[in-house]
Length: 137
Image 1 (cartoon, rainbow, N blue to C red):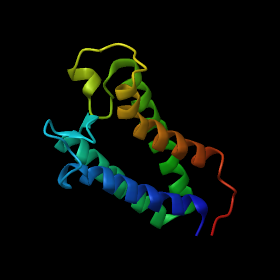
Image 2: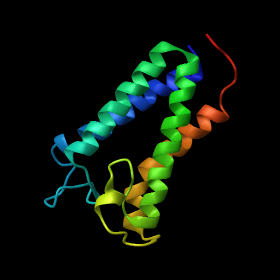
Image 3: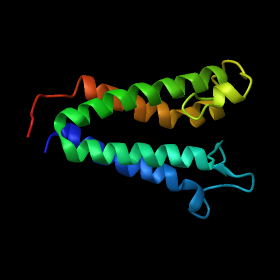
Image 4: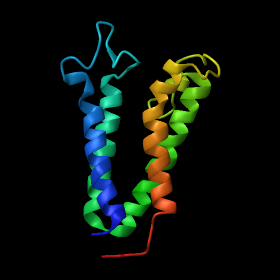
């Protein structure tokens, strides 16, 4: 099994964890904010779940499908996190279409709210483009 396929299984677990945050007691505060930083709604949960299923399928199918997943998923999630820094909303959940921009901010809450997408997306894109060692087992 190749490194990229193994990474898809990591992304499966990470995305399932993200989809379950709202349903684990103690992870959301009285305002419904996960870790007191950001809110996740059922649409976000569904997006994370579909992404997890995509990661699982890609990891199970082949090295090539894993690479495609990592590149596309990585680019989309990284861009979504960057949009969040610049507008306070992402595009994957259509937030930039339904909310007015709050403008660019490097505040700690804004960075922490977007860091999961920037980190996971950036690493996935890096893995799909740079870590591919060509082992096709």
